[in-house]
Image (cartoon, rainbow, N blue to C red; front, side):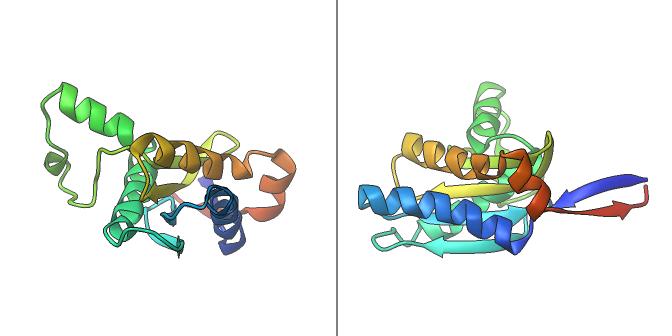
Length: 151
């Protein structure tokens, strides 16, 4: 039997809040998506000034990070290095741009966060900051719940 931790809406909102606060401080616009371990959307925010194309891109970055349990840019680098198109994975939502980061609690991937709308490096910094929002053991223990799942 496996014990899994799941992101709650409060967890997702905390992640978004960290990123949104930084965007507001910098007076920049972006899209922020938080997904569960399966890559399905939990929460989303589009700040003022966000390019429209960034909406789906942020969701797909988060999806990629959660599903592959790695940063979206790392998957893109592997794909380019091995000349193995992301479409070969059989999932059209995979992206290889930076800005998708897995969210981990106690070393376990519990979801993903995606940021899009800024230069790739900035998206990555913000997504990592959001993913780290749950890094405090006390916060993670309070805000996640465990569920058992049979193998």
